[in-house]
Length: 185
Length: 185
Image (tube, rainbow over all chains, first blue to last red; front, side):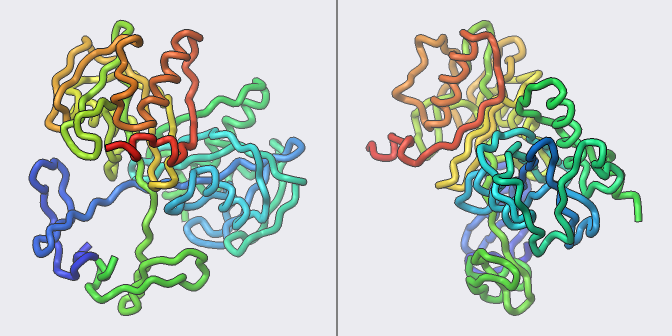
């Protein structure tokens, strides 16, 4: 941030009185501009023993497979946002979702929240952000071609839970080193 | 938002190409300024059968009781943020926290995440944002003087879970009408 979004004056980086973090502060109008982590919401969409994955048509990770997910919007519940992303990216309607995975990615100031949700009628259609959308049985999951580590972590938990027959809410703090693809081409 | 925080030009409200939400857009430098919900992290701190509550020394809800919680900062995990807030507001160190409650408040674009965590040695001290910090047995909880509906919801789940002997992660979407104090003085 360089300019105050409220008055247009230049901002400075400083620790405001009574605070202990550096902020972008406008000394002209007094506004303190806080920045906070963002929430990404999505689903693990299933139907008749298969899970629905999307092949990304956008960067980052163009051409890699992912679960439908995206930034939560103002005024949405996390489930509403997860439903919207699933409709937009996979053309699928999901119902009766339960909060299933919460992943902290503090190194990029993001939190992923996935819902486990059944696809109505199993129908789907690739959205503009997907090259392709397809159903996968467990043995066909493209583990080496997943877009993000959280996607693999969520899918692994799902197949383990399916064998155990219980689906608790999972929580995990991801580490940057787990993003092994970052070192690849 | 009135001015672009990147270049200082005036922004306009419009739906960018390929988007379906209105954003603050800078037509001078091209930056789209997204706004997203914020995450509030805190704990339900317990020790020897009691829970630790803080009497707020700040608005909103000055003088009402709450669980220690505050906005998640960039670069923090939700558990790190919950530990920090508990230290700042209640002067208490908590350990081995488990993600215990996730509350959606879409009408104010906030998500609360509470950890259930034991207080080391049971020691505490009121921080600058608290008038007072105290331990409460279940029968002494000031239900009518709690600061926020999510605090009451989390505490009720805790005492119910304690009787049942299991502490799963809870998820609830709050409704604005549940904020009954909004209609009070």
